[in-house]
Amino acid sequence: MYEYNDKELGKIIVKPDTRAKRIIARRKGEYIQLTVPFGFTPKRLPSLLDDMRHR
Image (cartoon, rainbow, N blue to C red; front, side):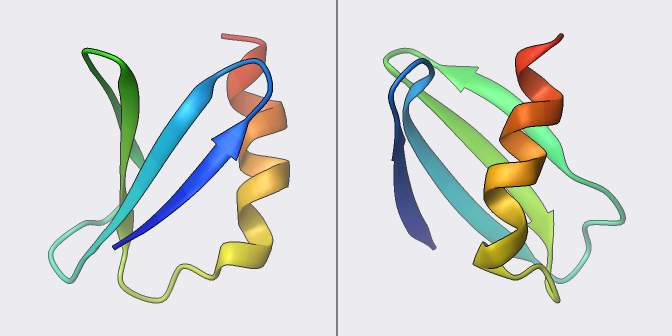
């Protein structure tokens, strides 16, 4: 599990899970929790957040 801070979205906690088949985003009070498949690399996070901003 690791943390990422974004200017617009705030604190984001990334939680790898071996059972996850896709990326799941949940709002947990003051932060966003991302459950990601086990092979997810932190390098993909900025592009993922750009895609999520439009939602």
